[in-house]
Length: 155
Image 1 (cartoon, helix red, strand yellow):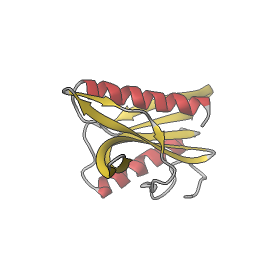
Image 2 (cartoon, helix red, strand yellow):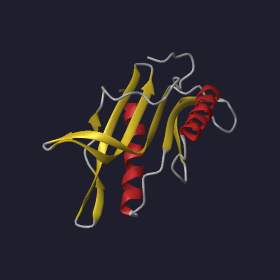
Image 3 (cartoon, helix red, strand yellow):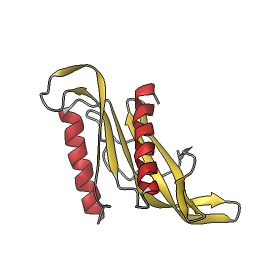
């Protein structure tokens, strides 16, 4: 992952931590590194990060697919070179006691090198909820049916 993509991931982590500190679920978010100005469509001197968060979780698989379709169209319109999806999910995590279902922040990075998936456990202790360390998750199935960046095929 390049430095610019790392900045997108760091923003997703900051947003997730802020939401957890407020005591709310982590809402889905999307962050893109774009080469065209979102307002004018003019080329930018340097790729620029933009992001948006939903105000509620996805209600269905169809809702998630529609979100991805919208994101795909924006990535094409703005000539995005990287897209990060992040949000709260439930995943099976290996622990010292075996596999357990846990709350996690999922992070999916798509760039010219492919798709990189990561997760960070959402841990509760002493009445406080916090985000654990971000871990690579190369074995996780990709929930995005069709790549988000223009000109790329599913891997």
